[in-house]
Length: 261
Image 1: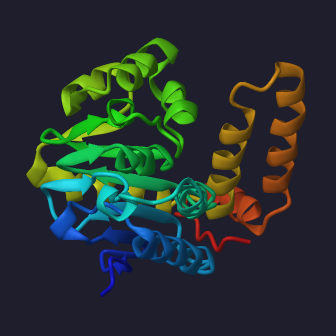
Image 2 (image 1 turned 180 degrees about the vertical axis):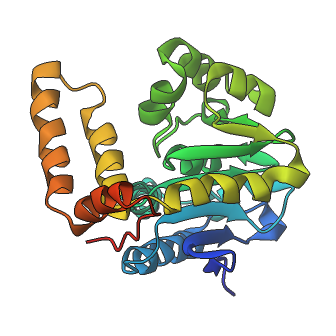
C-alpha cells in the first residue's frame, strides 16, 4: 500500500503536490511512509520544470500527527535511533528541496506532523487546524526541527511556550504568533494554496530558488559574512538567461518567458 504520492496540478503543471495518505492512523508516519516521502521529494527534485511544491493531506480531518508510536512500541534504544535517522532524512530531504514548499494544513497538525510543516517554507492554514508539539508529555522532545525552526517563525519566547507546555493551539493562536502565511476557511484552503503557488510559479525559477537559499543561509549570520554571501547568490542570478529575459520583457512591455536557465 502506498502512503505518499505526488501529482502535478492540472491548473498549472509547474505546481506539484505531495499527498500524505495514511488515513487509518491520521497520517502518522511509519518507516515505510518516511521512505515514500523521501522518494517523492527526490523525484520532484529531478524535475527541472517544477517551481512550487505543496504538502497536503488526503483527509481534511488531519494533516499529520507525527511518528507512529505503535510501531515504536517496544523498540530498543538502537532500533529507535536507527528509525530516527530515517526520519531525519525525511525531514531534511523535504527542507532541502530547492523550490519553495507550502504546507497546506487542515485538521490536526501535531508532533512530527507539525515538524513536517516547519520544514516547509510557507504555511496556508485552515481555520479548523490544530497545532501542537506534545513530545514532552511523552518523555521525549521534538527531534525533526521543532526546537530549531519554530523560534525562527514565532520568536524564542513563543516557541518555548509551544514546546515546553506540550499543549494544543488553534489556527488563530498560531496565526497571532506569526507562524501562518494565510489563514482561511476550510472550503477556501485549496484555492488559497493555488493562488500563492501561482504567484511564485510565474517568477524566474532560479531567482526564486536562489532567494530561498539566501534567506535560509543568511538568517542569523553575522552581518559582515551575510553581505558576502548575499552577493554570491545575487551574482548567480546575474549569470542567467532569465535575468536577460526579464529585462527584455520589461522594456518590450510584455510578460517574461522564464525558462530556468
